[in-house]
Length: 235
Ligand code: 13P
Image 1 (cartoon, rainbow, N blue to C red):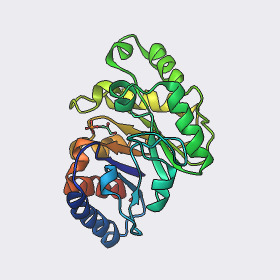
Image 2: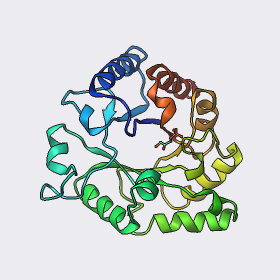
Image 3: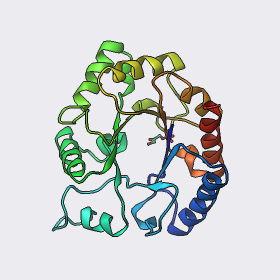
Image 4: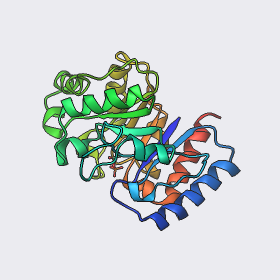
């Protein structure tokens, strides 16, 4: 399983340090073999070898240059960051990233050998139109994306499930993941209102290879509990 914590614009550097100490020790003590990735804000990046991978939530697809307010490859290299989240719904819908810009990011960071957690997901109006419309919408989010990239992880995050406490039914999650499995052999994560109460059952679904957790990952103890649930699934 792959378990990702996306902090978004939450937690200070000090809070992230304290959080990482808890999660890293949990992973070490329990000899966790699943992949655990934390995406903190840029200000909390540290240059420390870790048993938990650190990724960035975004970056600009250049080595360096005149791009006010952005962070580029050179700054990530300083922290040995080789993992990035691309295509997250908040970047698409709140920050206005276009598919073209997203595909350019994907191209640049795949050429740099980054592990890419690539997010797709439909708004509620599309889901209400049925499965065909839903998969069509997701297909558009794959335009310009190399689905055979070896370090690709795909995260299915329905927009209407993010931060709302709503989730698709297990059957609905399975249906989308089964359709995604026909498109790529990449691991498939589910994201959107994952919490301690539903993480175990979601990870047990077929073609679900892990979870991408927002709000509920902000508690180190809750995130560790989800990591424990993943470990239990193997037994
Ligand atoms: P929530 O877990 O808060 O719904 O957020 C999901 C998400 O966007 C993770 O990237």
